Length: 166
Image (cartoon, rainbow, N blue to C red):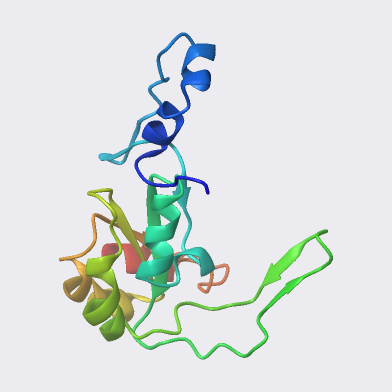
C-alpha cells in the first residue's frame, strides 16, 4: 500500500534511495506567488478536481501545494448532464459552468474543511461586478486570495475591469 501522508518532500524523504541519488538533500522547490508561500509550484486550478472540501484536501494530500476552490457565483450553476466527455484519450472536453453548490453551502460545509495544513486557499468567483460585490464580504474570512473568472465577459474588457474594481 502506498503511503501518501505528509508533505511531498516528506514522502520523497521516506525513500532513502531517492535521497542518496541526489546527495542526501531535497531541492528547495518552494515558491512565493503574489505573497502566498507554497511548498512546491503545483496549484490545482478551479474545476472538477476542487469541487468540494474532500476533493481539495485530496489534491494537497497527494502532492499539490495549494488549490483554487471551484468557482462560485451569486447563484449555483445549473449544469446540464453529461457535461464532460473523454474522446478516447485524445482530448477531453468539460462544458461545466461554475459550482453547482451554492455559496451558502460552501460557507456552511466546505471552505473550513478545505485545508490539510495551513496552505493558502484561493477561492474562484465570478462573474460580474454585482456578484463580486455580494461574494467578497461573504468569502473574505476563508480566502487567502481570489481568482476572478473572466470567461463569460465576451470581447469587451470593460465588465471585467469593473469587476476588478469592485
